[in-house]
Image (cartoon, helix red, strand yellow):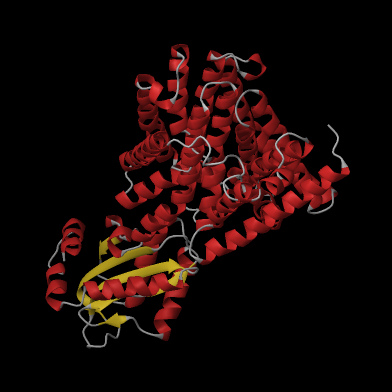
Length: 556
């Protein structure tokens, strides 16, 4: 199908309007403390059939036609956008950290499948007529579909949300990404079985064939091709134009791997994401190269994809309140509780577990893609499709605010403090105590102890941090993603030049991110308030071990 001159004009106007609305709404939501991705999805809802299409149907149908070459071109751009988004996301993943979080990610991912799948399958199997299914022959396939529909996450939305919140390259971010990868691969594999059951599997591949091909592809890319790429990149940088040669190489590999996974029945984004991980793991990739490709994709292609989610459906037509309510309740309860339980089993605290649960709750376009396929093959009716789309949008929009709330709650004294960062010391010089505390923090977080020590000492020498009631709080803002606190208890006391002239016997080392100016002040105030009663401090000093000290601190 060849685009006419009018089609080209329409296509370009559509792309321009999508980018403009995404930018305006993204900036607006950023200013009110929400990730830009939320504003981009809302922009799509405004531009879609729900609002713009209802108010000006002729203009909407002209700008976003459903049955000509413009539709095909827009779909092509949107598919390209999501593939590129996952490719650049993969470039930012530190494979060693993901492997390190393997146990936590696995428990989070598996529980994030079991519980929502059980809810969706049970409800759909025993009450299919409630969800509009009349054909009993489709009951098993429909129940399996609903289980997967409630289990799968939206890796593109999750990644963009983590980037917008600034936690993509943190422990929490890596756990969520790794768990979502595992979660979604399992989900798409089961969905391929469902398509086989209704005779709709792509390219005639069986489940076993798809599984073998996927495992082989993943192992080949991450274990073999990754090393080959690491050797090829220096040659490209030396012999071809920079950065064009490397960018071209990255995109070619990303598209080829996306095409392969799409061919075997697993969505193309998984291929591009895995290839992105393999390329990004190369020590020869320059940060400037990553920055160029990330800026272009996250500011141009990614917004087009997120706006397209809202263009998919009219939320008024075929709206069924009961179906929407049931699916929303099952979706939130199953995913948040399931992933939260998995994270708790892995040893994370309550706030981190709930943050991960809501982070994994984003369904976004993946849910819509599943719904579209199921709708096309007659597995679900229009009202279920609308409910799934609403669920996908609600979970995507609500994910960031809930994550932000629980991540903010975790940045308190007792949530940050870990028992292995509380030590008893006999040093008499404050520099020695600070060095001991810095070494303890560095040992647990892979920070450069010499750099941190210099920054803390420089701050200490400019303004001593001794405070009344035997307390001292040497502190600094450093290049870390999450605050760290270590405590030294010295029964004799050390001179930190406290205002009341007493030696400091409880010394807090407080390290906060450079990007969070207000957080340091908040934690300083919290520590001082905790120790404002001298009698409580004297009781704490009676403790003889870390367990007793932590217990008394928690209840003081």
